[in-house]
Amino acid sequence: MTVSTGDGVVSGQIVGAYGRHYLVDAAELGMVECVTRGRRHDYACGDQVHLRIASNRQGVIEALLPRHNLLQRADRHHSKLLAANATQVIALVAAEPSFSQEILTRIACAASATGLRLQIVLNKADLQQAADAARQQLAPLLHAGYALTVMSAKQDIAALLPLLEGQTSVLVGQSGMGKSTLINALIPDAQARVGEISSFLDSGRHTTTRSFLYRLNAHSAIIDTPGLQHFGLAHLDALDIQRSFPEVAPLLGHCRFNDCRHRSEPGCAITEAVTRGEVAAERVKMMQRILAAEGHRL
Ligand SMILES: Nc1nc2c(ncn2[C@@H]2O[C@H](COP(=O)(O)OP(=O)(O)O)[C@@H](O)[C@H]2O)c(=O)[nH]1
Ligand SMILES: [Mg+2]
Ligand SMILES: [Zn+2]
Image (cartoon, rainbow, N blue to C red):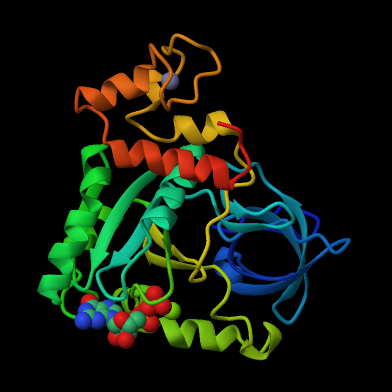
């Protein structure tokens, strides 16, 4: 239902974010191509906004309504707003080409820091040998408590469907994992939906490099995000990163030394949990690698 505030301003949801251009779903008014005021571009796909309709399905975003959450990735200079108001993150990995354990872990960190559940989905299950190898690579993450769903975007996505029901899922993954194939399997007219708006949105140049929200049914949606080769966590501090490891989080604050680096200090709660087999050593190594790469002295 379109909510009008009575002065030509209506509410809607951003379903496409393309630099300073946004596509807003304004319910019965349809899709409205919007620009912003004051060169503002800190809106994200999934945001609820107030917009003023100008003419001919064009409008101006006037205000951002409160966000429940914002999934982003960031390096020191730039942050990329991937999605707002989602309920879960789907990290898509595949056996071929091989995925990066570090990127997957970084996606898990960002999801956790945003308060979003992570679902790991292993695609290309039809490539059986490679899929078995990928499952082994995923073992430390499963041991840490993450859920895994295995499917083939090319052959059968049925296993994924119950996961999407009632959720606003953000689909994140490295290039080549099968995101486009999955979106096309889920939304047969996806390319047409994006193509329709590409004339407005920079003659289509950016349509594959930005986030887009597809409604699956009345209460489920999926936000496709650009394929990535790095997932920066510059927006998180060292404690955020450590806390986002679910098996490490309950141990934080239990080391003998406040400034414990969890390497070889006596009385380290994390090292002891590794010795007891409760925490995988490679997960702690990965945490330390990510902390170091993000410039934290831990
Ligand atoms: N064997 C197999 N190949 C797949 C599957 N899903 C995607 N692919 C292939 O993987 C390649 C990358 O897929 P694409 O959807 O473009 O990945 P994206 O970069 O994540 O959007 C393409 O050649 C797809 O045909 C699958 O389930 N099985
Ligand atoms: Mg793609
Ligand atoms: Zn410690």
